Image (cartoon, one colour):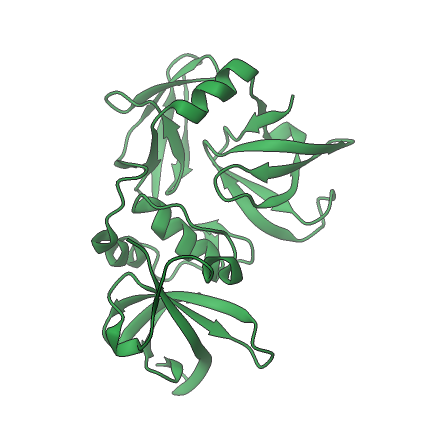
Length: 258
């Protein structure tokens, strides 16, 4: 098995092959991976959609046969747009909840075939590649007050770049996983007053490294994951926390996707 696919709601990716090691990201339903190494019950994988690498428990991935793998690469992909919604396995007759950003393939009337089973999604979805930046602020606001979780990518917990990656995925656009990686993508916007809703704003630390990212939602406010997904004021200095009345993040650059 050189490829695998996540058929569970959310699966942790870890920095080391150990249940106690740091969670660095997550796989969502429908994410498929390249398997780079095997060690006992652990697989070192690369997520196909964003090239992110980490360790996953082998029991939390399903094998992908070469024929299925080749089909997935050519099939149109849809992404779930509901925070949580029911996914039904009609073949094995069970249902469970999946989160926003889950991936489905070659859908017809919200049904698709995957790994020998017929599935039916009970919510809203968007076709990948049909990117519309005007939807980004509304998607972002769905996650307001979701808790911060390092490595997280769902409404139950997310980090700053997991939040922005997920929101963009819901709008039909695939971007990199980490804030420093996301900063390398898109069109540079020079001044904060030129930023539009949906633009990504990046912030650096004292060493000049990009460590934080958020989404512009109007000319004076940003939504970002810091302790929780929250809305704060933004200007050319950076993020002004509306609770503490202090600047918390120094603005470094702004990027736009089209």
